[in-house]
Image 1 (cartoon, rainbow, N blue to C red):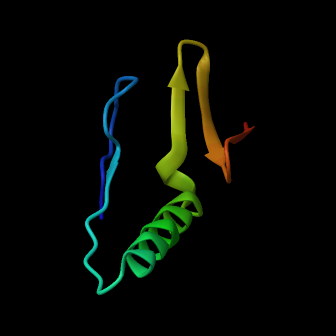
Image 2 (spheres, rainbow, N blue to C red):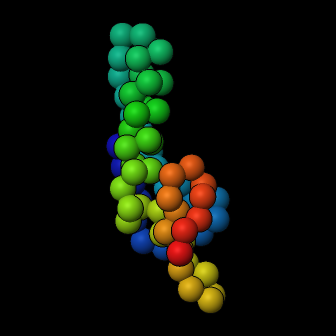
Length: 64
């Protein structure tokens, strides 16, 4: 898993996950787990705006 840090423009790739598994279901479950784990890390979802910044918490909910 590669998670880019720093300033990203809208539409740029921020996460790349490469998984190998004997079956597709296991590979998709591994990807889902990796994305869920990255959402739980507080510093990975900080968004900057002209009037300040917010940290994304969980599934798209904003908190100051």
